Image (tube, rainbow, N blue to C red; front, side, top):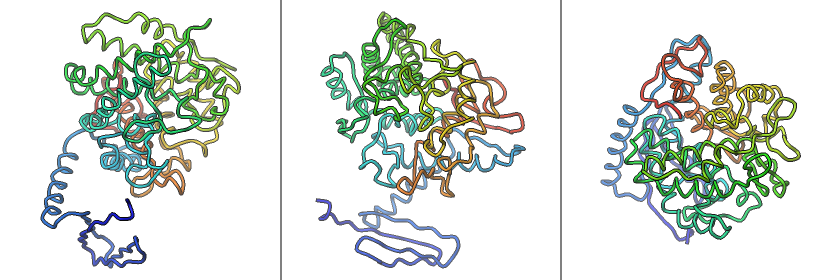
Amino acid sequence: MLDATAYDVAVTMTGGGSVVAVGPHEFLVTFREPVAELVAGFGAEPEEFRKVVAESGRHWARFWSTGGAVELAGSKDERAPELERRIVLSQYLTAIHCAGSSPPAETGLMANSWRGRFHLEMHWWHAAHFALWGRAELLERSLGWYADTLPRARGTAGAQGYPGARWPKQVGPDGRESPSPIGPFLVWQQPHPIFLAELVRRATGTPRALARYADIVLDTAAFMAAFAVKGPGGHGLGPPLVPAQESYAEVRASAANPTFELAYWSWALEVAQRWRRLLGLAPEPSWAEVATGMARPLVRDGVYAAMDAPPYTVREDHPSMLYALGFVPPTPVVDPATMRATLHDVLGAWAWETTWGWDYPAIAMTATRLGEPGTAIEALLMPTAKNVYLPNGHNRQSATLPVYLPGNGGLLAAVALMAKGWDHRGGSGAPGFPESWTVRHEGLRAWP
């Protein structure tokens, strides 16, 4: 029982610090000096505590001397120091909160968000950047969770009449789906394991990645291909369905063909086919049929709708149609000219107070892929309430969400795309930064 749990805490401080108990489980720490250090050891003997402190020092020395780095000194834009601050602090925050053995909660270890459960659609935003910043081993710690949960995901797919594995949304470490009117209908988390495994393969080498993650990739693709339904316009998704933009949860019985998910499905199935070839397996015809034959997203008034069913586009929450090109690499599903028009339509009018912290780096990804670095910077640093980064680096969303780590992880992923580029778009220069910015980087890996 939690109430019967007790542990000792050893605290050492500098700066003239003092600790006073102000409640049964509440302590007030004050300092006389403006600069101070506090180290707390939980439930450890003094000698063990000293070992932890020493190993912590060695760990952070290794962390900051390896992996990726970005320097913006010399940039003419006065916002460059602020972006550099966000980059550095986001590396630290995601390392301490998002590099464990299971996908983290959206507030990490800081707060009890959504009753302590983690959301698999957010796993990419927490941890994908590790592979892009030369720290793939930190992503692999939680990527192994999918292998542990694979039998349960296979069971879910089988119970619904599908092959392969269907991944849940809101779960605890055991992978059981939480009761929800949204979770069982959400699908945009399905391609995430393929994307994450592909990033690891590119970062660590093909043989190693295939040995560790082939079952995850192939079973995920098997479900995705079977889940798509062939119709007059191609292979579609839903209904029933809840898109990434959860504003449509109330119409889940009729929601169909969300723009983002159509492109993500096509790209991920192509990647899975590549894995089959690397494994020495013959291509799977049904996967190819779906990947190349996805229904095209609905275009209304020259821009992409969020989905191909009423109310088509609600201008709140995530502008998810943008992420069909940006977060998702180029596919035949998306026309860049139409996406450019959609990008500027969204930037012209959207309920920004209803967005989330990862939307801003995601929009920057879209602008970068479209060759608009000025727009990418404006999106990444947009002065809105959901895009605030506190002095400690936390991407605050509200009083109940003082920490929002998908914003930090998304920022790092976007900066990697903006600075390093992607396959066939490397070479000199930083494709997501205007010429007035001075961008130096090392240790970053190109996006797909």
